[in-house]
Length: 119
Picture 1 (cartoon, helix red, strand yellow):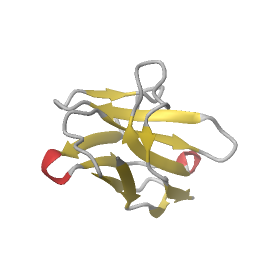
Picture 2 (picture 1 turned 90 degrees about the horizontal axis):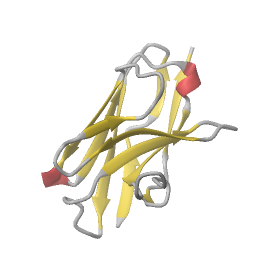
Picture 3 (picture 1 turned 180 degrees about the vertical axis):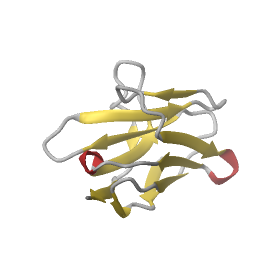
Picture 4 (picture 1 turned 90 degrees about the vertical axis):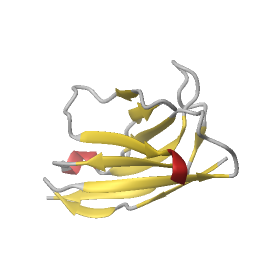
């Protein structure tokens, strides 16, 4: 399975951005999909997960309500809508199919896309 992210770029602090990820190479309709991010010099952070039936888990702490994950089964695509972004959220954002609970990183992930929030 391959995951290709798009929609990243520069956004001003307080702004919004929606990033997308298209899956190919395998049927993914029965798989959960997720986004994680990694800022320079920091650990990976799982951002959000959506199951095949639409169950959603937001993993960032504290919860902010500023991120929305969604998926389109017909397009094999998962989205991450982000609003009220902060420069500290500048990072590479990765989409993919997460591994099992407690080992989410051991899944299939794309190459990542840069999101830069400028003040």
